[in-house]
Image (cartoon, rainbow over all chains, first blue to last red; front, side):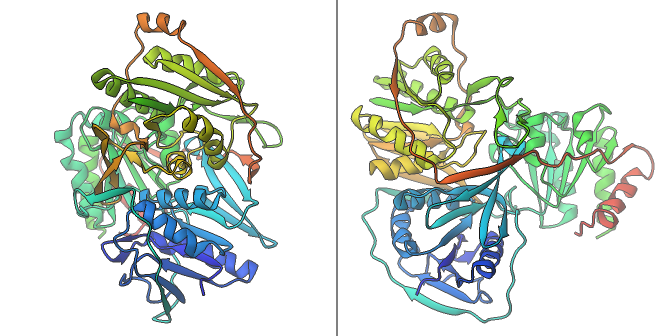
Length: 315
Length: 250
């Protein structure tokens, strides 16, 4: 039996990605309110990382399936569900959009929150890059939603209480082939996943200066990663997937440190959901200071190494 | 090759949207309208393809009369023709958009349908995949690199912690990310030429949306915190505040 409320697991290299647990939080809240069972569907036979989740359904034939095949197969698995949810990663958003069209229902995509009231579930979406919040309700079934990483707390249930079942599905003929070009370059967390994000702007003056930011990130340890503003990626100083802002990626880390970033409205929209913002800029009138919890006016090439030393001392 | 580029007219990213009193509508009077940046890059990809290998580029947009401006801008960039699917409102549900686009994409006999990966206003990122499913064509979105070899496409996209390469055959739907490259500016000559290019208007009736927007609100404004001028002890103080006041641990 497939639970009526399902979370589709996001996996990487046979391990369930931590964002999956954030969606489990949504599933449990909905399950408590509408009194339906919930569980996680894993698109492989041997994925680890869900040992404490009460109900896990493994779909053993999907491990190597390409997105279109995976989407049609999971559509059949989830057809009778009341709720189907997943993390809004590149793969998650992609899979859920395909499934929603197979099921001919809407998808509340990239949600940043949910409310549950009188058995009525509403989703919160960030529009205009986060400048407007929208509360939406879905009148079709199943109700489908994806959640932006780090928008919900992670759910940990208990130790090794999983009831696992395995289902097999028939696979359609693939319409495309997919290969990994750079296999899981996991030396650093993705900007959407990291607890702490160190970001550089035009004030960095050039790509050769990034060492100071790398050292600050290293001082915080493995939970920190690097990001940048749009002029930096436009100039080719840093890879474009590090660009945060309205035309780049929206992030909500615990701590965001903006170094030499003036704070254009598009950039601020993409980082405004960070829990704590620290700004370092030599221009006291830089708009970034208007949204910073802590600001240091000064030359970043003096400030950042001093901050790195101070952060190290507190480790 | 006959290429369609689905473009959406969106608010300029400089826009600070205002809401009406009961929070049901974004005030649009003062908005500067642009082509969604990702769609603009999709159009650039299409134009380069046709410049090199021949064919035609059709830009399509759904929405009220104002979206014709976006179509004219697309023509000025170099598209050959434009199709305006005219309706009273802009849909807020990608299912409705995809279903409204399907008939024309089918009847026109396009080889390749391009669209931006996501719109910077509504931001769901669903249209390319939904069109792929509806048309029964292969699709891939968030594409940052695309090569065409006859009827074979090779698309690259980043995924969390890696990169994927997709190989698909035409006809196909590709969702383009702005990161694939900046679009061209229309030349004066092309702006003038665009005025003589056809914009075909087709009335469409949108299906009712099953995604109901109940309320819009502005996020809580962040207020400036403690701003200090750099000097001895300032870095230590901020590090301590990050830990003790903001409660960040590392």
